[in-house]
Length: 411
Image (cartoon, rainbow, N blue to C red):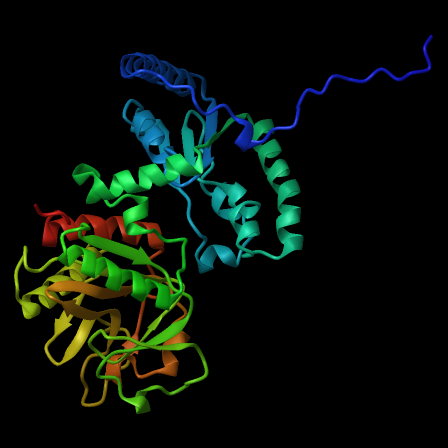
């Protein structure tokens, strides 16, 4: 017998995304035939699950513009919605930050006979949270074990787990981003890149520089209109009418002077900021009408959550009545501000825009007199008792925008 130890075959050889063969293609006819066959198979699988009481979890991860949304839409198109649920996953809000990171996923585990699809997942713990240093190292390292245990429990409880990572090259990703900007059918769907969504928190100066450049390109006819949704780190901004006395805590957060109208305001995590870059020459050259339309956009968005937003002739922004609070001096009913407006026009192209409080830290507004208006409170959708996520608000904003302004692109 030989003294040499026989090597076991490597069942899982080294795997790297950059070694995947990326030049294989399907022609359109072959693709459509295979898609139809796979959709039929999915329907049959779902019917079998409904009959047998089995359940499944399908996890999608991958690069931005990798095709997650399109793949999920093609699945959803043929599935019985009674037993099929899609869960878009973004950064956790405060409610979930106070709990174990897997808590929000346990809430979404499918019941018997159903299929749940996760558009991003618990792997964010060891991907984006690790890379962006959003989680202490000891926590994300522990996350590997916790994820394995979580999936083992699902498996032992009878759930089938399918995990899909959609990979594209950096070059293909850039091409898709550029295509989204030039395709008139995709531009107002505003896609992930045009809305520059939710989880990115750009530096404020970078955001302003981008808006100014984009506004110039829109005026020159070299770029399309754009609504840009962002979420900033904590900061204060000073509009052209800002009074220095209204900055109550100058050292609390960075303060940026900006060319928009208005006074001091706060931006920070949990607040959706929408920078609106529209060509008013092709719409309507009327500043008052534009501000009124922005107010209507906010009010229409809030109405989707059964919140009544109201205008005030003597105060900017959108307000909500708070009858449960003590009345104001003069026995006036209490009301809080939930959204702010501050714009700038350059050659009839707008930039800056609006902000809606979803779940910000309301105490941060205490460092300023918001918009120069004292004696009133500030609220948010979560403060009003609504378990609303940023993603919910984004969907409502997009739908309400079309109702108020029409498509973003006008030729």
